[in-house]
Amino acid sequence: MSQHTPPGQMAPHIPTDLYQRAQATGQPVVFVVPQSPSGIPWRSIVVPFAIAGAVVAGGWGLVAAICFLLDAAAHTFTVIAGAAGPLGIGGITLRLARSKNT
Image (cartoon, rainbow, N blue to C red):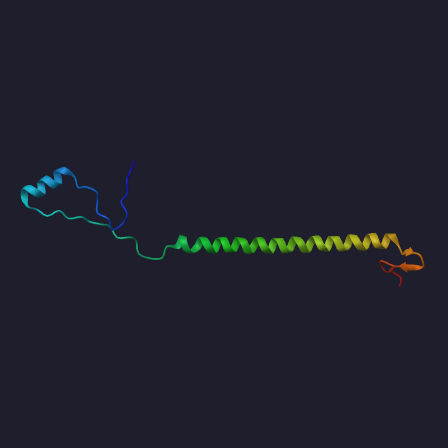
């Protein structure tokens, strides 16, 4: 299992043989800490835009589905109203749809 130290932190220890050699010869021990990669972290920029694009596409799909269902309901209502003819209750007659020859 590899143990990674956080950036900017010194290693928890140096190897024993390196330490003993440095003590015996007076040679300095140099730690080289790699720099973080420079540039723009593209993943942190692209992921929010991808999520927002998916939400927008889903919203437009939902709007299109609702429009289709309302259109189908309106056509169904006109077919049923045309087939039923005028409705009369008491002395009031209500035509739900116009006939094609008027």
